[in-house]
Length: 289
Ligand SMILES: Cc1ncc(COP(=O)(O)O)c(C=O)c1O
Image (cartoon, rainbow, N blue to C red):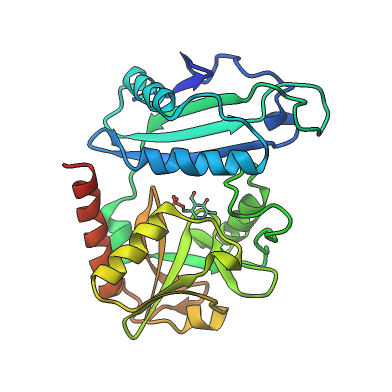
């Protein structure tokens, strides 16, 4: 089990000093990222993650050097060097080194980093029992400040939210937006189920366009659920039949408690479990496993 890190095409380890202290990713937090995972040793939806990485980078005028093909090749080479059964893959593109100046062009060459480490698997018991989340009072970034659509490596908003959740015994923080509407988790998108309707905050609520969220919405529709991307208030979360979270590494994770309140029956709900099963089946289909 190993960690291998590819910086601008050169594979090394976490102790290799390959990034300049003048990198704008370090001094300004000008950096974007993606988290990808493997199934049976194969990266899942790498193309969609690279496409979202490019959109995030473009929003900060960061030019991503490698082509999609080169990116994929570098990911596979780094995975081969790490040689783990299943990999957690983090793609990071920072603005690169340059003058300490905010102007576009001050850092002419972006830094591309691929971190590959063993995938920390969510234990089966966590899916069977469900998790507790906290509705925190750290507000999600205002879309006209740093838009949550940009998957920025500057994660202070998310870190502060997670710390509050952890201090309350929550495994994930769910944040509201500046209008008091439910936005998203610090590392996940959030869904509610009520009388068969599967609902999640709309992108306009100021959230990341989660790749797992999108797949889940499609699966819910295929399973003939009514589906809504809408505005949700905390009350609707607290009184839902079921609540679940989605993300690349957590897939579809049932929520059974929100702070001191129990969700539904207190056990993972039938719709959530059916969606999880459908999600895992879809992974196999998409990877031809
Ligand atoms: C803030 C936030 N929302 C949602 C997600 C889920 O996105 P995805 O399903 O693309 O992994 C993440 C994942 O890292 C995230 O950081």
